[in-house]
Image (cartoon, rainbow, N blue to C red; front, top):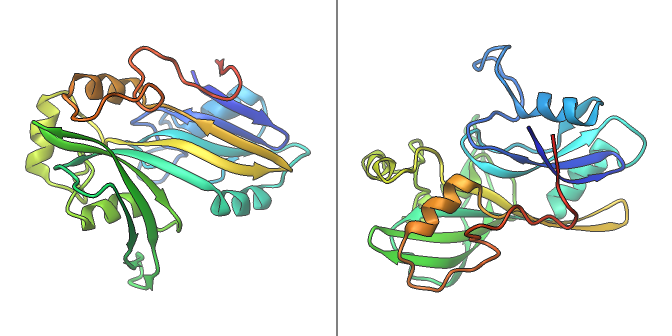
Length: 238
């Protein structure tokens, strides 16, 4: 089953479950269930992902559709210039309300590239010590959100590559068994149409967050207790 948040000429916006690859890869094997195949079956046409989302992350993913409408190249440029935001449950209590992060990153070839993000702290919890942050990356570097919050001293919980394995084991005992990262907001203009989509936390993160004693009151849009996904139009489930 795949949840479709928006379908337009030449594109489709869907929700990726945690633990699922966006597309097949050499290390995953040819028979693994991937999001691309589910979306292709759902829309009945050839589709291609316009961007990637970490396997253990959840949330919004945009695909181009092989049909008249917006081209894949135009979608790519539009998405790069648009407003994409993530929610992350991170280690420790983040003291700042808002900050800009400008810290260059090296790619897989060792080439240093500029990277910038904007961060807001939305919730704080004293015990267990954690925070819910919203991050808007302005550049699209590899693992940018994960690396930038780590550089602030607050790695994403469940991140064994850039985070703290010992702390992650403690959170696994509390029910967190994946990367606590969710693509929740997209605001772009596609084909002359303003597209604004919000996808609240995936149920597993939502349920965990609901058990924590936050210092700030809950936000029903970002942290719904029982609300379904909230797209601009009614979602289609397959």
